[in-house]
Image (cartoon, rainbow, N blue to C red; front, side, top):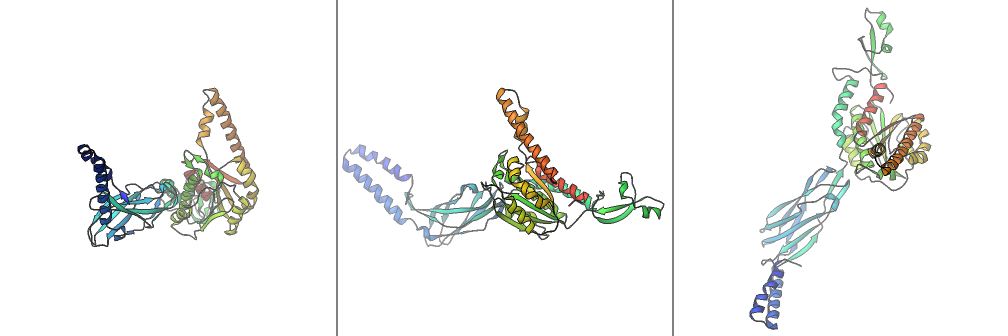
Length: 430
């Protein structure tokens, strides 16, 4: 049972007869009258079971983007029903405007839309539909919470997709589908043409030149049908926040841009995510909708407060196949984590694959190192400089071991990683 504000109001109105006839019997009679009216109103209220509810599927939405859920209420009784319905979701679903007043005649239907704005990745669920069926006097209502299942799948937002058109244009130049053709040193012979100023003299075909009166150069097509393996670190270091965004989410953004670009380039994308154990894996097999599939695979991944087992992750990469691949390790360039865990597993990867480490850099370190107005700021700057130097030394160590390091802030990492991939592809180094 739920009572409305009218019941306290009736009790307050009882002061009038009490003042006019100030005896205890007047007060008790008024209380009895209010109780009887409330009870009668509750008995006359339609049953909640007289309403049936059906929820339409919500589907998927990118994190931070609005969507809505639709519930259709149907009056299955022969009485008119007046009800208040609250569509409750878990807090991270960001439900708003979720209280609906419905007035339904016998057999009538009413749609109820609730706005959702997901604030966390993964499957976000409805927790219950609370219904209050009011009596004719509006004093009380029958209340019940019904289980009307609903789920919205919140995907990584893929904000870096704004960089995809410009990188695809560069890819078309490499691939010869644009008017301007960049002659990269790929591994597949394409054609012969006359030399023009700016061409690499190493591309001159002397035999063909000897047969004609003009200098002739060889052109090459960028490599195709190569493998790109994305390895996403979900260990404790990925839980750190840079500009209030988890490192894991920024790494996902970079992975999505690279996957979308590589798929359009005709390469195959494999994906592994894990920490002390493998949490997810995916093989694309040349699928064109790789970004959508990768978003769905990443949606449930969350940082785990544990160290990464790089031996297990390297084994998962090797289990995807022995063919040479571009292995992209999406992990923070944290000196202690790299030196104690990753370094031991690198030889197994660099022996067979081209390895790139993509890291989200915290711009706050540069800001701290540059600010030295007070004594406290000088100490902060010294600590920041120490951290930056350690990161540089770790990056140099990885470079000597044959690993390419792409270290940039969250906004610049996706395009920087995509540009590095295009550079490797143009040079025939995949």
